Image 1 (cartoon, rainbow, N blue to C red):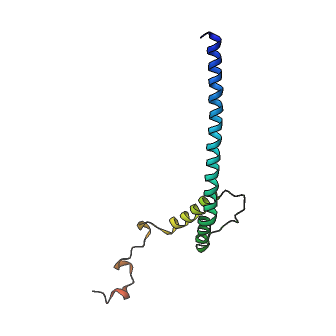
Image 2: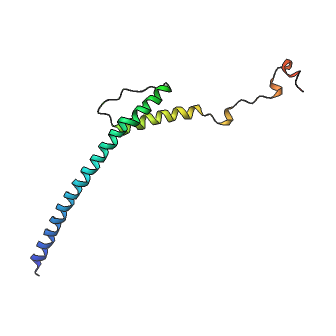
Image 3: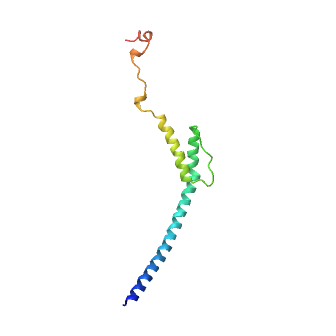
Length: 113
């Protein structure tokens, strides 16, 4: 095999590989696009309404959801605000009030043993 045949074989192999890569890549890209569309539809039909209902029950502000909003971002936004609200409700034990006999008024402690 001479030098120019080697170069021609290398260029041909590169072009074939590039063509296969583009073809396979487009198929994979289309599959990913379809899967994402399914996930978006499922979020819009089941998850987001539940999160909106929960946020409304907690009296959290819920912005209107537009058609062109990304369902994943909307779901994360709602879940984050609900989670923040729940975290503020759960106080650690150090925030509780300690009551002892000495802190009560004297008239309430007379009958105590």
